[in-house]
Length: 151
Image 1: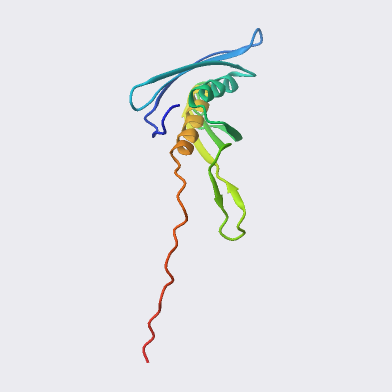
Image 2 (image 1 turned 180 degrees about the horizontal axis):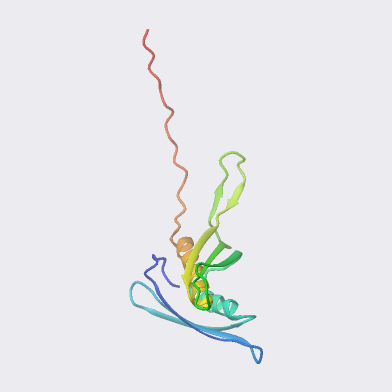
């Protein structure tokens, strides 16, 4: 499993796709310790296959809740900005302060690049890093404030 880290994790992505065969992706992640992790996967498109390859490395089940991409610049070499929202399947829950209901935490990630697949992978890795770096802490009880009244 790739340890949680900041955006300094290096990643490399190679994707093959088209109408003649399955979309395939090879992803190499290098963690902060310099350890290389490589995985290959097939999917329904280039982003799907790249995300599945990342999942094989990270080994943390998640659900992709939102995927959004927009162009930041104009032209054929425009920069694509990607935002994803994920939810971990195994934990990351909190108790809602007012209702007392269990709330599943979500984590977002952003990426920007001229290549839309690389932009998408950057966003996904960013969200995964946030999720993996999240530490559940017990609620802190704050002491009641006392007010001194002078007569």
